[in-house]
Image (cartoon, helix red, strand yellow):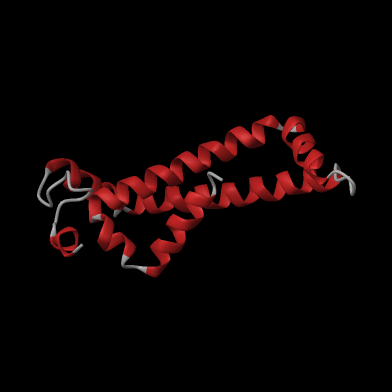
Length: 123
């Protein structure tokens, strides 16, 4: 385990001074990237609120799973947009972990929370 912690390569592939890692570091630490992630978070929250509003309108006490299916069918563009947001979050996770290194990324509690939420979104 110590071998992995001491290794400066990200995912054991990209050395710290490698060009792809430097380029990604410039991108992920830029204000534009932070703004993109912020806007994506806002859009994702609004989409989820709208989706659950539709789901509530179609809610059936005896068959709650059908309310989810009805909400999905009634507004398929919401699902597509939510998947796009999820793709941006996944790209953010991969880009930041490559740029900073996985263990450095996971050493911050907020990043662990962010990664957990992103991974749970696939479930």
